[in-house]
Amino acid sequence: TSNKKRTILLTTSAALLASSNHHNIVVNGFSNLQSPLPSDTIHRPNPILATLPHRSRVSTAQMSTISMPPLTKESLTDQHHPQASSPTTMPDVTIERSNGEKKPRSTLDVRIHGQWYNLAGWRKAHPAGGHWIDWYDGRDATEVMDAFHSVKARKMWQRLPKTEEQRANQLEMDAVPDTPVQIAFRILCKKLEQEGWWERDLVHEAKLVTIWTSLFVGAALTTKSMPGLSIILTGLMMTNAGWIGHDYVHGVDKFTDRMRMFVALAGGLGATWWSDKHNKHHALTNEIGVDEDIATDPFLFTWAPDPKHDSPLRRIQHLIFFIPFSFLFALWRFDTIKTIIAAVKGKRNGAKQEAYALLAHYTVLLTVFPLKIWVPAVFLSGLLSALIVTPTHQSEELFDEYQADFVTAQFTSTRNAVMTNPFSEWLWGGMQYQLEHHLFPAMPRSKYPKLKNILKKFAKDTNVPGGYRESGEFEILKMNWDLYRQVAKADAVVGAPYSRGHGQLAAINLGFSWDR
Figure 1 (cartoon, one colour):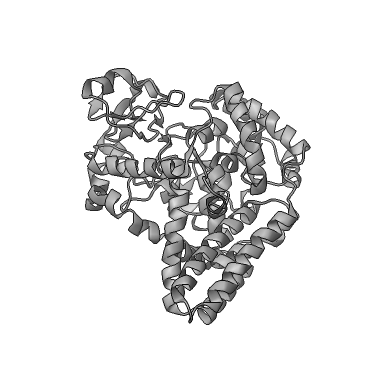
Figure 2 (cartoon, rainbow, N blue to C red):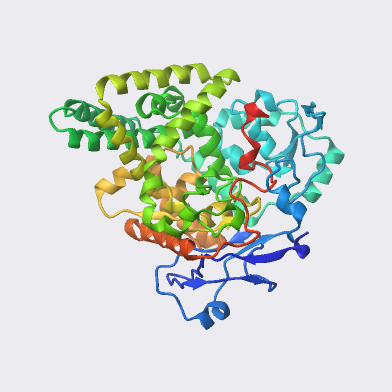
């Protein structure tokens, strides 16, 4: 249906990143011209130079675009209904219902390393939840399967039931073929695995945990004598616990299996919530309506919204961004509690153990730290965490449709931050190597600095659009602030996609597996 699409030019910043040059372009209004970019992409690395003259903007640059079907009353209504069909339809990919009740389905087909598997009868047994299987119905899941599973688990999928041959042939005809970038990446993954890149340095892990312990002890000892210092140390302790726990929840080795509850005990964040939200962000990065990390409205907008989804706060978001940023850690804690309650009720694997770990965390927190210490520390930690996690994606490409080429999508939606000092290198907790982490989330973060040059060469050899993207730690923060400012000044755009989904698979408004 691409020939029926029209292009909606978002009133946001757009830029053409050629070599090391940045060009600042602002595009307004609607256009029926063919966009030079893929039809499902918003291309707008945030500019850092002054705005070019108006005439140059349209004639010399790639335009910031987003492609959607022609707008009708029905299509606008469908944005709020998860049952609406996705842009790319596949046979029998919707969950059948009768009188509002779910029916057992006979097919749920996923492609892994070129082979189609029917996972309909196995989805409920998936340890991470059946929603993951649903999201890849009719799609290739090779890179996601390899990224999030251990070697042992990756061998198990070969024993899963295969899709019936005639249906598999039809699915293969309809599916997007693997790209040269994906094929090259699979070769690279195999090489790195053979070289032992997933082997964890336990001495390094001991250092990280020791630093966290020192922050805890220092914060506890200064609650009365130096409360200001205690707040700072507690905030750093919480942020540090999040990054260490983040690494352990992603891990697939025996050590991280034993340390999985560290993030609940030390940071008050749940592995179950993290796996559902954060791993989805990894798998479907920057897909509008799916990735919750870019669904930050109505407090912060990363593109000009439809008027019906707009907020007065958008006009001043670049001035008040630090307020919603500060609430991030509190929101994560709230979502953790909400998710674990639902998980215990739904009898998800490990939910009770995680609930006990969270109970232990709050028992220690409320016993050792007075409210006047840990409450402001939560908001300090939120500010620090948000300043770290937001700029590495929000200023890069956004997608209004599913991206079949996982590898290229990660390169084009991610920007690394280059640190200027050892403290920043520690504070960012490995998130400065965002691309390395997104392509290899289960790899110990201590390996990322060495992996950097390998990925730079890979991007050059495979001609990945935009190449390996990185900016200085302060430059990348400025880029993100510029984005907020430019979106704040933009007019709302009728028909702009909703951040909570417009009917596609894995849309945010579809809910989690225990709700389905």
